[in-house]
Image (cartoon, rainbow, N blue to C red):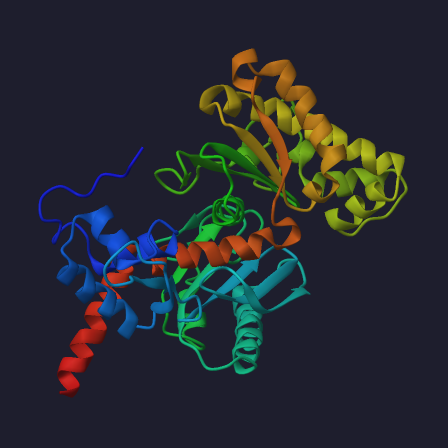
Length: 401
């Protein structure tokens, strides 16, 4: 089926930002493509492409084979026009990286930190590490910063909200810390949602999927029709604090009977240590499981079963095409997913599971970082943001003149 040009003149319907989106996503490679897809005149397309080229967002590649008349030059998105910073901050580990605008990692590192560390103690360290990374790269503008934290976050105020994981971080604005290294906009999401962003950024073929973050805590990223759903107050996907058959077992959130109390990484580590073995973190327990430790493998499979019991409800409600399992426990995918499948197939409807696929995270241990980068890129390269940037540049040129 051929694509239909925009109705009317299109001049007010297709901005330079819209054209960049067509080029960046591979739907258009020449000015002729842009005219055909938008209905804009050659002059209008030329003016918009020129603005994008001045901003460094579009470059001209080798000329395409002509179908007659003047050969149309190939238009390429310039992924080197800027970078985004990514900061995946967890309970005991932080991952940082610099990415280009197509998601290629240019620099990065991972470091552990003490559990319960305050924002004022940790954030300056992270900023110093980011500054060092940038100093080691050729000068290029930072266009945005993507950040993730465990638990519920407020993406408008850029704060953690009532997190049982990051004690002392609630209500602490993160943006001022990043102002030490860049004036670029900061975007915040929870750690499960950025895993979902990573799947979308990586080109998943699925438009409806559930992305599980199974680590110290449990979270769920929900993708519907190709978009991550965060909910009215950002609390969508808080699957770990769904009440289950855990009875009166205390959860770290202060309630009792939560799924996390019997299936989260912290609960599994406690159970593993109670068996006479020793693990300091869920990553240690996963390592034991991969090495064949029977107790660790049983704990992971049982955790998967418990998660699957709750996940089955979400599958019945949302009918996803796939369930992606990421996080530390996702590194032992075969063991963990076996438990999840067992409960899901037992509790979900036959129709909801008929075509359902269970998959490991495509990005592996880097999924959180890639998701943070994807979050930033999604915002800074949106048509609205691109148009605003071009308008600012034009105003600055006018002032200089």
